[in-house]
Image (tube, rainbow, N blue to C red):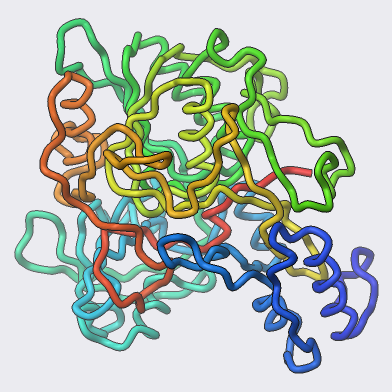
Amino acid sequence: MPRPGVDAQGTLADEKAWLRQWTDQLYLWYREVPASDPATFPTALAYFDVLKTMALTPSGNPKDRFHFTIPTADWVNLSQSGVEAGYGVAWALVAASRPRDVRAAYTDPSTPAAAANIARGAKVLTVDGVDVTNGPPDPLNAGLFPARAGETHTFSILDPGMTTPRDVRLTSANVQSTPVQNVKTLPGVTAGTTVGYMLFNDQIATSESLLIKAITQLKQAGVTELVLDIRYNGGGFLVIASELAFMIAGPAATNGKTFEQLAFNDKYPTIDPVTGQPITPEPFQATAVGLSATSGQPLPSLGLGRVFVITGPGTCSASESIMNGLRGIDVQAIQIGSPTCGKPYGFYPADNCGTTYFSIEFQGVNAKGFGDYPDGFIPGGTGATGLPGCQVADDFGHALGDPSEARLSAALQYAAGQPCPPATGAQPPPRTALSAPQRFDGLVAKPPWRESRILRR
C-alpha cells in the first residue's frame, strides 16, 4: 500500500527482499541473523521479526531486545511533538503476573488523567470490571494502554492513603507529554549546599527547550548539587542526551571532548553507512540543535563535578548515554535506584511504505572507549558497570520530588556523606506488559519507540 508520491508500487516479495538487504547492510550483528525462507512468512512485519540475532547477554537476556516497528504517522507525532494516544498517566507494573499490582507512576498535566486527579501511587483494582490482580490480561492491557484516541474505559482506583476505592471513567485522547517536570530546589542536608531536582521522562524534540529552561532555573538558584531523576526515561534523541550532559558538566570539563563515539558493523569502520559521511565523535553539544529551541542558542550550564542519577529498569538507551558520557570525562555519576535496562545500542529510523523500522545499527562508547553494558548499570555494584550509589526500590507512597521519597532521600543523604540505606529493589524485568512471570521494581510500561537511542539524519 504505497503512499502517493512517496513510495513505489511493489510486491510483498519486494518488501521482504528490501528488509533482508537492509538488514545485511546495516544491522550491527548481521553475521548472527539466522537464514529464514521469506516465502514462509505471511507479512513483511512477520519476516522482520526474525531478522535479528538470537544470541544472549551474559545474564541470559536476549542480546537484541530492541527490534520493532511503528506506523510512520505515529512515529512522527511522538518524536516531534510528544503526542500519543492515551490518558496522560504512566502506569507502573509493580507486579506484572498474578497477583498483579499496577499503580500510577506519574501524570502529565492537562490530560484526562490529571483532570481525574489520578496521582502517583494510585492503585488500579479493576479495568472495565476485570480484576487486575488475577483477571485475564487481554482486557486489562486494552484498557490500560488504549490503541487510539476516543476509547472510554472504567477503572476502580484506590487513591494513596485511602481505604475506599472510587470509579473513574477515562477517555483516551491524543495527549502531549511533558517530558521535563517538577523542577525545584531543595535545601541541602549540609550547610551551604543547595540541591536541584528535576524529573526527566523522555528525550523527544520538545524536551530540548524544557531542559534549557530547567537548567537556567537551577543555575539562577545557585544549585551546588543536582539530582537528575530518569527512573522512567527510556531515551530518545542522542543529541538531547549530549546537550543535557554539557549543561550538567559545563564548558571547562567538556570542551573538545567526545560525548559518544559510534561504532557500526565491520563493513563500515570509518563511514556512517546511512549518511555516507565520515564517522566523527558526537561532541558535548554547547548550543541547541534546534529540535524545539532556537538553533545555535548557547546552552546554560551548572559546571558540576558530580550528578546524582535516580534510575530504574526503564532507564534505557539514550538516558544511559547521559551517565556513560559523563563518566567518560570523569564527571561522577552516582546512581540511586535499581539497575538500568542495558542498551548501549541505537539506530536510524527507516521509513518504508508507511511503516518505520528500527533495527540496531550501532553501539556507542564514551570518551574512554567504554560502552559494554548490555545488562545495565548497577548502583553500588562492582566491575565496569558498577556505579557508586545505593540500590533503593521505587517508592509509590510519596510524590516524585518529595525529599521523603525513598530514592531522593537516599540521594540527599549520600550527598551529605551518610551511608546508603539497606539495599532494596530488584533486577531489571523482562520488557513485557501484563505477562512477565516475576515480580519487579516498578517498570513503567512504555512502547519500544520510547526506549531508544535515535540519530537524526
